[in-house]
Length: 267
Image (cartoon, rainbow, N blue to C red):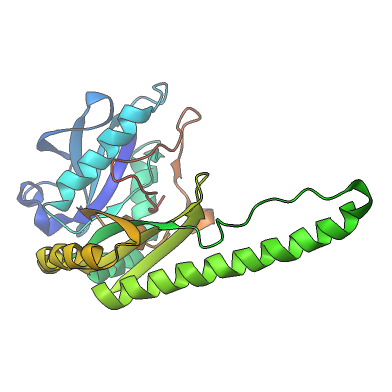
């Protein structure tokens, strides 16, 4: 039997596993394709899985279901999310994968216990948007090309400086335990910074209050907040390449989860 994998949790967080050594249903939780979700015990860990038919395709709804199950489990336990589309072909490959990496899984659960992820999306006007393209005469194409290369490099450095400045401001304002930051330029001339902050779960309300204050102060930026989320961005890629026991079915594709951010996870 193939198992579709959602996340790894702490066995102690699920009382139903106390007297069982075999998978037990997680009551009232359905996963991908409407299948019953099970808790698969593995030493002091609980692997959250559901039965899977490899012939079934994984679509956008499956991605939403995947994220929902992880979010439900996150209400009960520290979790290490699996990447969307992770499938173990049978019980043996599941047990072998967990056994091979159990020390690392336990270490990361300890690191992330009591913590959550908050996500900031910050839209900033492009500091170089005033630049316009110039068309040179044919005889000056070579010279103009080199000039454009220099100007583009200068604009890139200016954008990077601006992005670092905003990122530093966010770090100083929110003082997270850890952070992941990415930046991209949109077609309409704005920079978008995606900032993931790792914080203590007990400090979520304080973080939300700080966001309200910060967004009012930084009127030049359009700031959006989401969370709390499971700590997707802060789960290390633990499974070494030569120990990968989980395989993605050919039909599986990565889809966006509701938080509108990538979901880096173990696989």
